Amino acid sequence: MGNRKAGPRYLAKQNLHNINLAQIAWRCRESADFFSKALRILEKRGTYNRDLYSYGIHHNHQETARQFLLVDGRFLNDCGNYLSSELVTIDPVARRAFEHLEYKPLVNNRAHTVGGARKILNARIRDQYQKFLRILSEKASLDHSDQLSVAYYHFLQDRAASAISRLDSVKAETLPTSIQYDYFMAYRAFYQSKPDEARAIAVKYANYPVNRWRDRFTTVIAQADEIQGKAPTIVSDDNRDQRQAQLAATEPTLELEVDGSIVTLSYEKLSNVQINYYEMDLEFLFSTNPFVSSSGGSFSVVQPNKTELLQLPDNRRSLEFELPRHYQSKNVLVEVIGGGKKRSQAVYSNELQISVSERYGILTVRHAKDGRPLPTTYVKIYALTNSGPKFYKDGYTDLRGKFDYASVSTSDIGDARKFSVLVMSDENGATVLDAPVPQR
Image (tube, rainbow, N blue to C red; front, top):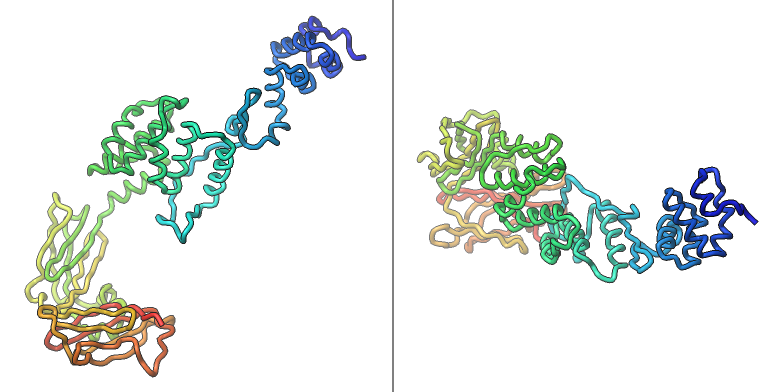
């Protein structure tokens, strides 16, 4: 009949680890009073016994039944990911069945959706998001913490508009803590081009005692400063993005653009550059290497026709100047060298206006000033194929100034990927352009 000595007083005094509590299970089942007294002693002494606690369901003892269900877990595991009832609540986060994960650094390889449906290309984020959605699907409604979590996962997917909409629906005063909400609000401010607003949020946490969160908000301040022109700073030595940004800020930059006779240099961390001018025999250069004539690679072993050293103002980031007058009427390659960087651009002196009909493979050559057709203008075509550049055809424009650059009777256009076109006129100059392969 079990251990009759094991009454409430006995349980209160003895070493419970040396007692087989299952021997009093029958008494817990038969007597609600005995059950209540025994369970109070077990609870006071920090002892849990599955068999005894299970009788909380038999006696409709709500608190004991709740604890039994939560600790045992086998029944709740069959009730789905989330459940809210008077007896028990299944919280997957509290039960360690689900946790929010941080993905850092996260760089999505596509900014826009592919095809008609949105797809999460990162498999780990996709699996995590689907688990989260299954939990939400079992809730009657979403609370403000849920909305904040949805905003987080939408930010991860670069769905900024949706994330901001979710964030705007959250009432911060209902959240158990506000620091996550404030961080997302600073994040939102950057999306909305409001760095001052982001900084105002972040300064409240400048002395926050938790290093991880303090570094995050310090990074927000640093980014706001950089947007306004200050040099990038490293907040944490472990932050790859910050290290990369600071290293990039110390590296010289140089860009070149030539529009007509005006040369524009954009630069940083440079005090001077060397400018080289190479006069081009455009037809010879084109025939030698038709698809890279503007890259400058063919000139690496050629002595420039003219070299200048140009001082760059320290207080500026761009500088404009005119091509030397001698080269304003010639085909010339302009090369700029400085800080270990080399930039070049081919400048074609011409009065040609060329339009290309991509669908039919027809180009039309007109005079740039008066728009009249230019007949008997020489056109030379190279095709870029799987085996490299190949001569494709040449000829002259007709009386309409038109030339069919794609049609031939002796070659197959099938393996041509694109065309490079030389247009040259004795009176009106020359130029080189790329032309697509017409669709068949």
